Image 1 (cartoon, rainbow, N blue to C red):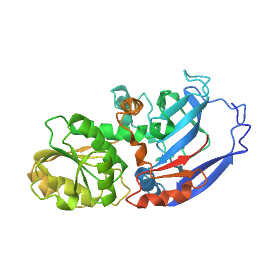
Image 2: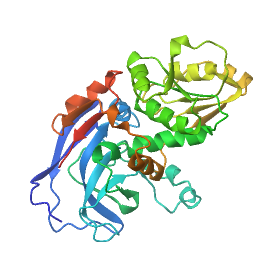
Image 3: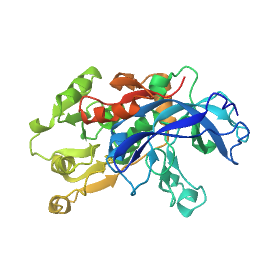
Image 4: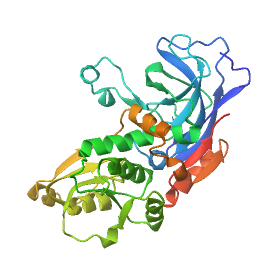
Length: 336
């Protein structure tokens, strides 16, 4: 493996709410990955609201440093024991599973009993010079798909999974509730199944983005209390949006909770959900294949949702930008 240009390896990590640049001794040129593992060099990483929540303490442990970046593109540096070749461009399924537990054997590898998530748990994320990762979690990027679009594979896969969990079809009266990257991507996927699906947002910047993509939209304050939606997908996970989703849905309707938040436990009156027999579903990560296919065919082009571009060195200063509702994502150039 060629690491001659790396005296040390840099990474950007969060520890106890502080984002910091870290360095470690570079892998020696004689290093070879373990069986089933490959070494990759991240090229672009996407800072999203999920990274903001990790910095706020999502799934954190005291004094634990976690390298950020669940959505990124990379180049294979060492793949001697896999079907990949050096120089291949890949994206990563961020959910690492054991492959042998009962859940994995029954097709629930996304819910592996020992699941860890790249960029969230104590696993090195995309804001790092080099990563050693299971080859099974890497997918080749189609040759005609550039990094600006391929980097959205993991967030788009989350959106596809949320719509799948909700069971959207041409007859579903559906709304997506949220103001983040996931809200817009989820609405774009929902519209594939039902052109009348709409985005319900709180911020004007989200409304403008919806107009740019030709998405039907309403402001949350304009929504009445009719409770007429068959399905509401909440991509935020705050007390306000979860309660709003429950109010918007009709009796025996469905609410999908796709927001992954570091906020304190949501507290609101559950009697409405019980009395109206509302079904609540969780939604996490999903397979990347469908996302890559859509990105390659340009049926969905989320590159307009890159709000800012920064260098690797400036990434720690870029993370607070995501507190601004008009910032949907920040693209970090990790390497070239």
